[in-house]
Image (tube, rainbow, N blue to C red):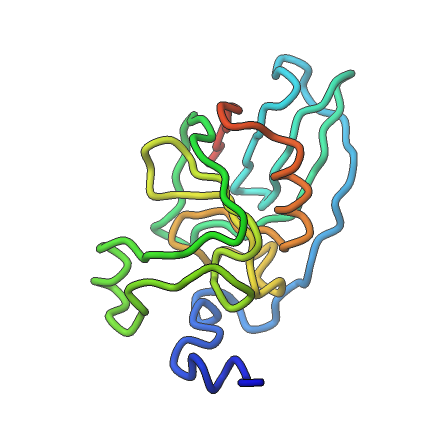
Length: 171
C-alpha cells in the first residue's frame, strides 16, 4: 500500500497554510432552537459563527460546525443545491490555480481528495458544501469560499437534504 505522502507529496495538507496551526478540532453536531420563519429543509450558513444550520420542524435545527472562507473569500446570498455527489472529483477553478499554480489540475474522488466524502453544489457558483480530509480545519476560516464539514457531518447533511434545497449564506 502506498502512503498518502508518497502519492501526493506536494499536496498533503495543502489547505493547512490558510488557517491557524492550532485548529479547534471537530465541533459536535447538536439540535438547537431556531427562527421559525424558515421552512424545514432550508440550510442556513452563518459564516461569523462558523456554523451551518439545517432547519427542521417545530422551530428546531441541526447545527454543524464548518470551515468557512478566509479573509477576502467570504460571501453571502441565497442559492439552491443544484447537484449532490458522493466522493466527488475535484478540478480547482482557474482563479485558484492562478493563486496556487502548484495545485493539481484534477483529482479523482477518494479519501485524499479535498472535497471529502460528499459535496453539495450551490447554484451557478464555484462554491460547495463539502467534506474535508482535514477535520482540524472545522471552525476555522481556511477555504477559498466553500464550506467544509467533517466527512461524518457532510454525509449526515447529504442524506437529509435534496437537490433544490434553499441555502442562505449570512456573511
